[in-house]
Length: 420
Image (cartoon, rainbow, N blue to C red):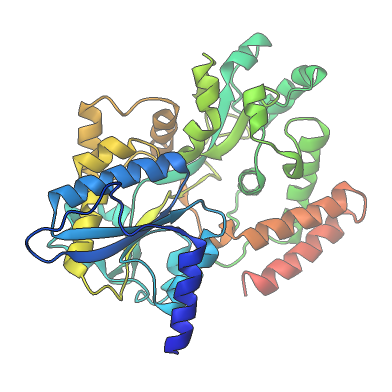
């Protein structure tokens, strides 16, 4: 067993970009012995840079603590996290996905109970509703950094060019497509997960029923999925948006997509270049059937979360780092709204005073808070389930099966593999 742990740990070290510490210069030892803790996250170069800079400030504030950092792009990160969790070699403090709570802590004991760190982590900065997202029974396994929801972003500059209002309904999108498709422009676009959730939104509005029951069982039947598949094909055929296999985010910059369904946390990443070009990007109202009941069928979830390893040998120092990451002015200044609008009240207060709470991402976050969006179940984000849906959708799109046959096959496999 020990040999296996060593092998798995070695795999992790080879797979990730690791450093002995986050500091860019030589580590200056203090007179007292340093406690070493580890911290892991995923992100692009910009996130890595500001996180490292913030950790260096934490180390300067606490010279008796040294933070060993491990970080990489998202690609492959989930697989490596699985290795860490199986081998008990995970970092002391770690960024985690919301869905990992069910995967790695179904009984609430897969991560440390952060309630036990309340002497070091100021939990009063979060509402009970915020903390509920990280709870399993009495155990507080994680704390959400910010909230996230799929949002309809519209390049209003393009819509204005065609004399069109920002769309509010499904009919508005089809009407826009009739005008824009002559110039090979799509009124909207979406990657596969966003498209899947967008189609669920449509079907929930059409039927007046949730896709899942309160117990998490599948409520939709095969007929509902047939409707989703047919509506998806209609969106493609009438050039409202491209098929997910052909979606390319760069086309937002090229302005062949006049909008996109994307997460709140993706706003700057998706539309930063358009804003720099002087285009007016807006967070539109959530699409509805008739402009009423805005928010019906739409879901929210924690953007990302922080958790602490149940195996940490240094809970005090891990708690201090966790508090810094969530609540400190230093981290708030470095991070800004890159991960979404912080839920921490102290971080938000500081950012408001500094004028950081502005821009398209803040606009999308404010819109999210205006409506009672449902809580997104992690199972609806399962990549295998989403791939399965589009696999059978393509059976219909390319005339390999009728909608009912494709939907029945999807429904049967989904029930057996994801909802049993």
